[in-house]
Length: 140
Image (cartoon, rainbow, N blue to C red):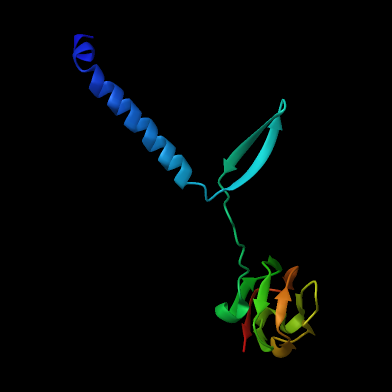
């Protein structure tokens, strides 16, 4: 306590500089969104940080292929340009191979182990495959 009595000026100056620094820091971080809230007849501005999140769908043309085993639900994908699908499913030579989307059924083949199909550019959701064993779909 004796130290504080001898150095009270330094403590006051340090406290004032600290508070000034807080004020400068708070005024410099106004990049968040603000909204006005009225509480009991008083207007108060509240600054809140805003986080922007962008969801990017996987691009099949970037991956160039989808692979799996048996029936599967797949994530949505986007084709940047019209594509030829080249598919193979060795176990489907005596069963059905189906690629289904919410937009189209580009492949529905019975008793074939491989084939091709056309798929126009666009975003495809609700993607599923019905198959027997391992399969591959390549985009060209």
